[in-house]
Image 1 (tube, protein in one colour):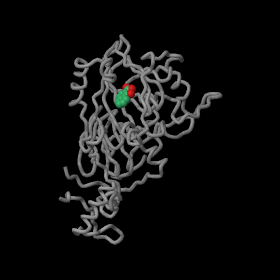
Image 2 (image 1 turned 90 degrees about the horizontal axis):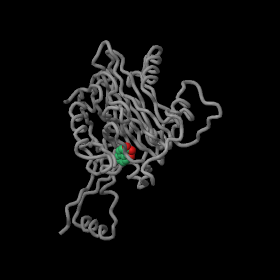
Image 3 (image 1 turned 90 degrees about the vertical axis):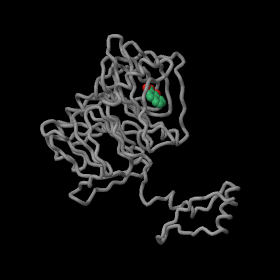
Length: 374
Ligand code: 1HN
């Protein structure tokens, strides 16, 4: 008996609209046996009129997740787990572990005196530090001390490991990786460091001290790798830069005061597959809605407010994480009339831009604000 099959018909000139007949259904079954198919049965599905994300907007509340993340400390060791991480699972995605689109994210917890073994992989990663003191990451022999809201790179192919000094406190950070993308491209390799640990061969925090000086580049500094030589972007200078920029700009009606983290050697994105920004919503600020291609994972670095994503309202506060899937309408509002709010955003914009796939659109109706459906 012929199995029921989908036929994505649309009654629009230029689109596939072939009615099923017993003869055609038999023909499709015949094609099946040769591992082939008729394009017109699936063309409208594989060529949507506009991007259709399987990911749904999600808010992960830190106050809900934190105790569960800490509980993993009693349940598994970093030695056995490799990485002690609780990952964020977008319920719209069943195929892969993804927080949104082709971006994976998780919350990693480490206690004082613990360390995770060194390894490297084709996937690129970032860390965004949430709480605790004494954490550090070593990337290709460069040791970086980590404080709250610091943004750290572990680019593809670099040896990396994390630890917390014995004198520190329990630390939690957000990991973000392009693993779903690299796996979709079937290009992921993984290696454990032969010694499980690497020597620190440079002065502590040297890459930030060398490359992280605004408007200045080191004498003779040349860097041609596909990722930023500045492995750590600290919170204090980032926040200061946003404040200075806010003094002299109206900002964007859609994004408020937003600055992108860049590779200081190229002014391009920090890595080839993932970019990041920090955006300030000034006291009382409410942005207009827009949408663009690309996947976006926001981390509330400071303050509280709400975002409306495809008509759904999400109220957030410091340390919450939420996502905006590709081509989803979104707008943000700061809940405070006296304090600014800051949103860190990890995204795949470098992929969208370099492949010529970036598009954006403003929400035209209702003064630029979406009707809220939930
Ligand atoms: C990884 O290397 C880390 O280095 C964290 O801390 C999470 C998730 C999947 C694959 C590799 C890390 C990861 C990861």
